[in-house]
Image (cartoon, rainbow, N blue to C red; front, side):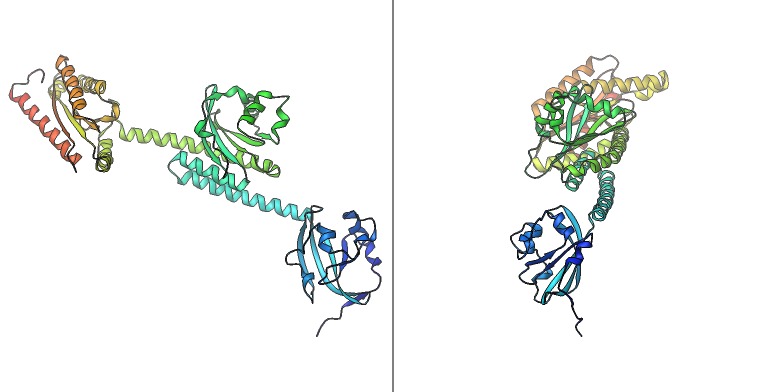
Length: 452
């Protein structure tokens, strides 16, 4: 059974309401009536609107709104939310079929819910921001490569805030250098061309950072007169507006994270996000430094400063892959101190340690530290990757001559060089080791000769 439509001959009773009320003819969508509040809100001062399409009168459009129920031959009761861009207001619109002056019509009651919609949007934005922060923190902790993690983080937050660029610049004394950057599609990156620039350009920022404040610049034009140097620095980087926060480690500002060219209504929210984010960047930087120190300790010989056996085992596998990929040559030298046990027994272990350090210092005079490994108590190995045979032979001769001239050093040395197709680094190492062992046997067979 169809509900009987209410009938109105005079709509002036709706002038007493504080909500917008208008009556529209279905299908044609022509305006039949608008109450006093509606006419005030839309700036209508006469009856010229009557007979005009509602989408022209209410929204300055040239075509009906998508999904409008008035396009139906038999519109029904419905409730919908609408944003009217013409007057920048949100409405809850209640549509009801009626009879008006003897004809079918649709009455629409538009309740202004702009404040509610804004509060809801702010809540949604806050919840979204919290979700983005959580995701960003997970990126920082999940990605072992800090530089890559920072790039991912900048992209994630930049997309959320609809910014054009996000970047981190590192403080180096009185200078600063951009070290991480994300740009929106179509934007030219600045990091590749970045050089160390004077920190004094934005010294005002550091004064505010010292007072526990972030930087919020809604428009760089505001700085042109009062802070021309800062204005020029922003203009050079095509930064129209920005938000920035310090990254502080042990009470020292080590970096600054900034977000540039974002919608004006997101500046304050971005500042709040950076306050939290900068803390987690700082903890990630500290963790990365500690990880690198631990890694260095794991792969470095504490006594001599060269690489240790752990690094030797690790690098053999990596070097073999490089050899296989590029058909590279490799030269290996084994060094083994002669008579260390006797020195330890007669002069003490301190004397033996000094001799070991002397040999390490000698080898690193001719080979890079990363090429030198202490693989045992008195045993060192150098691995020279991608080295021509002539250069390898020259460096070998120089280190051998230096050792022969040192009255305190007696060393057995074995070496091997190869560039054969499909060479095995392990086999080259074994060949050098075998030659060193032969030298060692000759040393003891000759009655512990002083030098090689």
